[in-house]
Image (cartoon, rainbow, N blue to C red; front, top):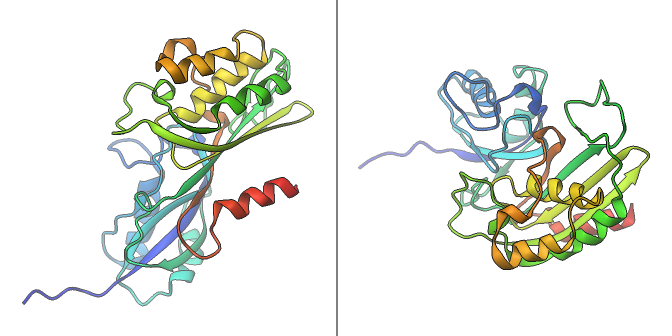
Length: 267
């Protein structure tokens, strides 16, 4: 009879500066976040170790709440991995937390909701110190127009027009729970909450809302895109530098998206 080596499933919460990576996913001859974490884990556990990520962020996209799981065959307690791995990882990747989860939880397929943040620096001159985590837009943006138009996307729709070429989703039906847009000085922040997102969906939303805020597109283009699935009526895909994967939710204790939404309302 085949013997199975016992293990526990550990879930990592990962933060990284995406400007130095060719995205999350491991790929030959290019630096990726997945590979950096796997190298550190393999060294720590003295065996080749694979991690399964929740979201395949693109080149230049950062994260403060990426999640990934792996199988821990060692005696190292799950909560210690954040401390151990952070001594081995490069400075642009950090493990924010590590915990044991049920063996049925899969970082990608068990996801119940995601939050993305898109940041815009709306000033005539670009910022030197914020260039890696904001998108510079020199022409004035009316954030009130953006905010009003964004409400047309809240709900459950076929977002096929908001998917870039190369997307592989079997279904393009998605639910957006809310889009919050705020401005402080030259900084415009868009927070998008939903059950799941298509390839480049948030960046297409951001690029379209920016164009609406500048008066270059009518808010009606959003309704038309939802009705006709015509990508051409929408704006350009916004640059990756402004995008951050903020949080990923599962059916775990203390991780309900509803609670986070209440936190946003109280800010």
